[in-house]
Length: 379
Image (cartoon, rainbow, N blue to C red; front, side):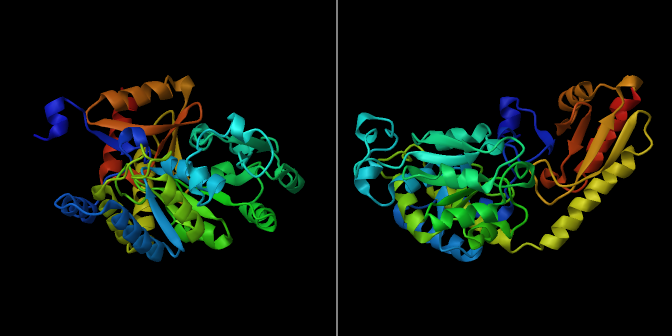
């Protein structure tokens, strides 16, 4: 009997995604071993953070890396670093950027604006606003022009925040254009790529394009500890990020990363970058096809391979739609999947469908989900 059994917590088959509310992902044995090893000794945490960052930077082909307590914390620290640089007096003023000392123009005023596409506003921008900056929107939900970005940049611009992923590309300028405009004006570009693994190449693609830093979740595609994230990018910015982070008395002090998590995310990056990614992609395709095959021909049900994933990742999922005229209500199917045995979580899709994501499934679990759906529809 494990801790979940002792507390009466139902375990779930996760065919939804690497969601925080479901625990992110499952850590492979090398990560668990590394965390257990790290728990057996005391170390200098700052030294450990620096050396883990150095190794992760090497693995991800970046100048430098910093381990944060999740991607949202990485956004907080990276934004703060863009505001202050390595000025310790400025570090101490975060997040009071709208206070009296920062209202007047002059050498004492810190940059306090972050530019964002209106089409890319989302629930995670609280992490940016937590620093005390003001978000300056550009464009419209369906269109942004280059001159709008150019006009928005001022002496108060701390950085440009860009949300990566195909699902946020519509209405936004291409990242290449953003980087080009920003580089001319020496404005940092932060790429929020929390869920953009796979592909593995994204760990270096955005920064090699010229972005100042890219932020990733450690507990999603990388399958590291859920409470970790990565800030990858230019050495100067990463050094400023560290000034805001634990154990320093700054805005990132509550965002603690322990020695166990540091060891775990390093092991996860080593493990993930060494995978056979072509084989993993083939596994996902097999799992999706099994769902499609199992549900094809069911009365009132339409099923097909869908691409890309809900997070814009280059991976497939099975899209299942139900015909309400046949008496099949999607929300009722979702409820029965969650409440049945075993409990199953899948993603709602549109008004009448659901999606089965193979990224969080062990091989064979997709057949369990398909069987549960057949059973529910058969009733």
